[in-house]
Image (spheres, rainbow, N blue to C red):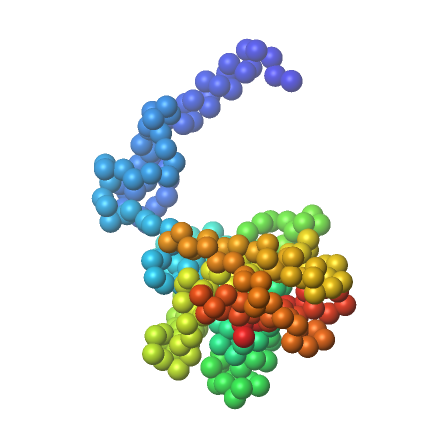
Length: 314
């Protein structure tokens, strides 16, 4: 334990260490490095501020557009723009650059899996998985079985596999140690060029954007169930029916119906989606359906061994 006089010295030194007017971050407008002290009693971490340009005001969520867009674009673009200071601080910038590029790839794979599962009325995946190779394999399986394998190039496959190999669990560029206390890297001084990676990822980004255009309104893969309002509902449905407390112990149609009727989803405009009881029916030994005609939505629920295995859009 420290003595009172030692505490006083530590406190004085600490206060002195907090006196600089700038943080020491080179290669950026010096004004952005200013330390601007504020009154703690009036301070809000997240707020609008008339002292700063409105160009920096940010809105969370994209009105009328897939909520996936802001996430995947954000992770790609922060890695993309980080190439500027990387020329001077490459050994530091490598961590956020790799992490953000990798997370972009994970998001874009999951987004496309979801979109094609909806488009082709397939069971919707409920796996919480960070493994890029598994996600890629599942997506390619869907596409190749429908003669659409050309949508994912050999370059995309290689880059995704390379990112998986360097960070299989999406933690190696976030934390020094894994959950078992092992170093996430062997620090063998393997070297690669961040600018070369930058241009590689430009190509990958461009190729995935080309798939996005195919899902636009009036294009080849346009599907009303991929509109933002339905997308949120379907994600909520999938989460609800694959939740542990809901998916097990389905020993009768009556039990499943009781779970179906518990589901409720509120849209941003205040409308409430619920299943209508008279739409519930058993269509095969392992398949049940339920819907709401007002919302033009019917789902198929797969029950195997008294467990909800998956759902899909009818």
